[in-house]
Length: 171
Image: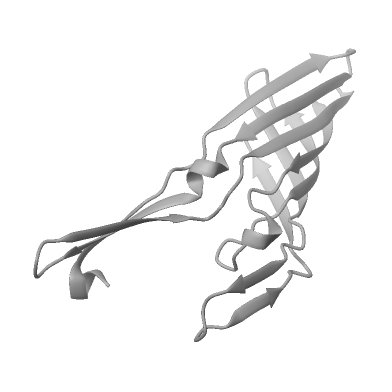
């Protein structure tokens, strides 16, 4: 589009987030932790689009509203030290959906998420740790009912396997 008309600009605000976290060593071997958070997805949903014409120099701007809502996050987890240098970890997290079923699009089919995690941490020395973790993320069915006009039609359905498997190795 920019080649034909001139400059194309898109402005996007990344959601700001506030997170409150707690960590407590309840015994020599056990530690518990938790998070409570909020993300400003409402601002992310407003995307500024501008097109400047090569021929006239005029600029047309508009703002697309994706009808996003703010989200909240809650997580709990635990560490268990079964050896002086080794810890096992486990945790669960929930994030609310930034968009309602009525406003969800195929381009960004976000829904609520559940995350289940487990891992191992090895203390190489006092300053360096190495870990291996696995997370299963259930991203919901993300139902979509998007009408894009008479020529495009309607896309309707959901995601039957909206899951992610994440393996992390870190140092």
